[in-house]
Image 1: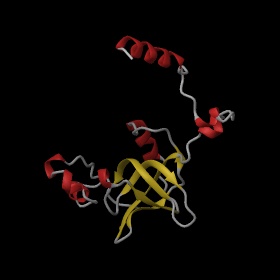
Image 2 (image 1 turned 180 degrees about the vertical axis):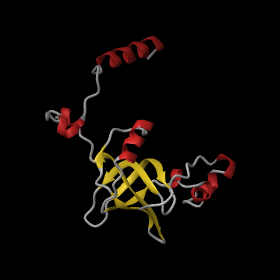
Image 3 (image 1 turned 30 degrees about the vertical axis):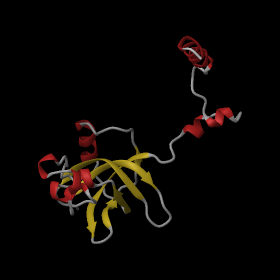
Image 4 (image 1 turned 135 degrees about the vertical axis):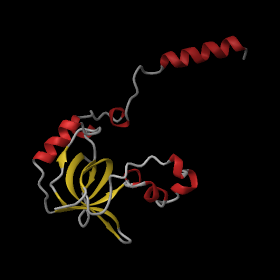
Length: 162
């Protein structure tokens, strides 16, 4: 086959492809509904006290009920509104994805981070410290025994909790 025929064959094949990708659900003849496209877990925000448990990681205790929240960081008006209405609750969440919210030493001690990050390259906020009141945002993973929040944002509200 010469080059011209190969080029022509490829052009015909590309033109024959559908203009938009078809999902497996659509291909199976089942229409996608808004409910099917809804995320498996919600992005939420909550306020609580940070606790580090030996051998059991980081926790948000005395936490408020989680509220559905849009993705992204908090702006100052949102933080001020939370501070004005600050009320702790009775919920408890195990925090996951914490490394970026620890201090530099904590980040480097997490997993194998020290293998590929040096102390001068650490990008950690230091907002997650034991005994502190924080506002968190993340993906809520409800469980029968333990509910978890996979953190996307942490804002320190006070250096003590109470």
